[in-house]
Length: 80
Image (cartoon, rainbow, N blue to C red):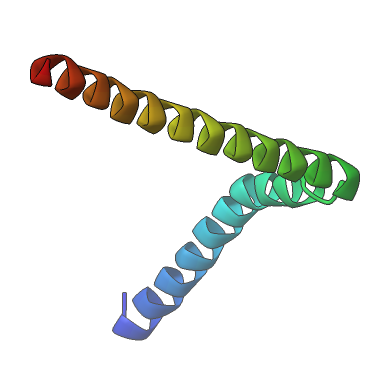
């Protein structure tokens, strides 16, 4: 076999493997992108995430306030 023929076979093999990979994994990408095209569902999930973040901020504030007030009460007891 000449080096030219080996080069041609290598290109054909790479093309075939590339086609197989593209057909196998290319379909999954299309399914994922079409899944996220539902704007109503996306908006609903974004609103839910926003609400959860707000609730988390409130819980963090309550926790910090309780910790601060607890520290103050302990200090007041020590002073007495």
